[in-house]
Image (cartoon, rainbow, N blue to C red; front, side, top):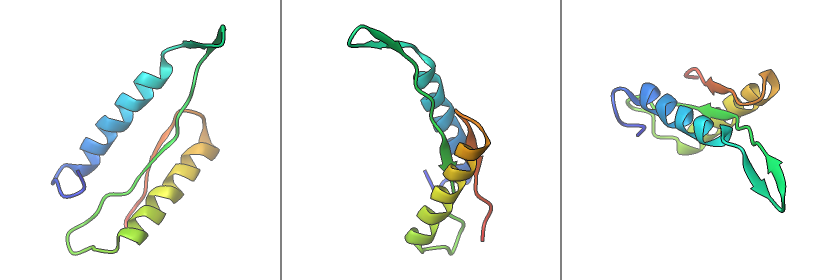
Length: 79
């Protein structure tokens, strides 16, 4: 996914699918439940090979999304 030219759009589409799946109510031990997800996205740019840094950026974006609102998506800027 990260090497595609449209990686950010593709990642957003995957995240949107996760959010949609999480919106469906389900029952656990007789209790109706609904989950929310926060997703952080960091896109690998050409020439960037540090996977640990990429993961840190995605993790940081996820925590920004969590602080902003439930069920949110955040994209990290390069850097």
